Image 1 (cartoon, helix red, strand yellow):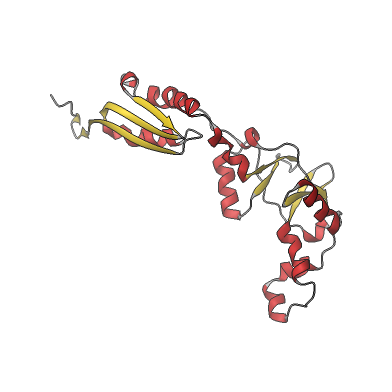
Image 2: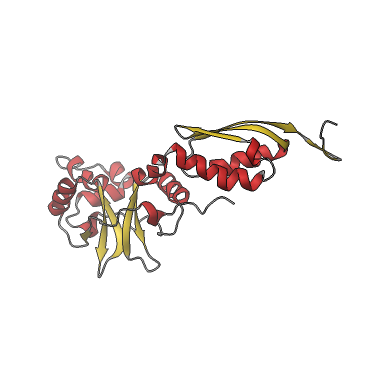
Length: 225
């Protein structure tokens, strides 16, 4: 069977730049500039994540610096108008924070980022304590796997599992993460299963099945004899 997929704790950064809820506006800006980050978790107590402050949370102060929003703008952008007057991380942060647990799969983390439109996620334990941070770049690390590693895993966990009697006749080639399967199999209905399992191997960019064989009819597989 295919191996257990990588999880967030495999790729997350454990050293995290964060600020406390009372951090002043200019300290937040300085910290972002010093560490070249665009967002930071906001912590309280011993490290519980209570929010995230990002560049987008800071920009309303500049946007509304030399003009007061009209009544329509105030109603339409209540949150931004409030943040324009914020002076601490607690005033400025987005809360509750969008977070992920360390045992979430990379696919689950990617889905959260896409749905919530964020570029990074604080990683927290079951009580909300900060464990690390995972970014879009971290999720892409699986694509740094060598073609040789991917080929070995495909042979071991997919080909040998699905086609134990024919594994010697199936050729696996991987180039730039694209897996090509060539060979003759008994039942072509397994081709779609093979493609799905190969796609689940982390680091795979695409799958090109070039497998031939007999289709399974109502009376069982046809062997052509």
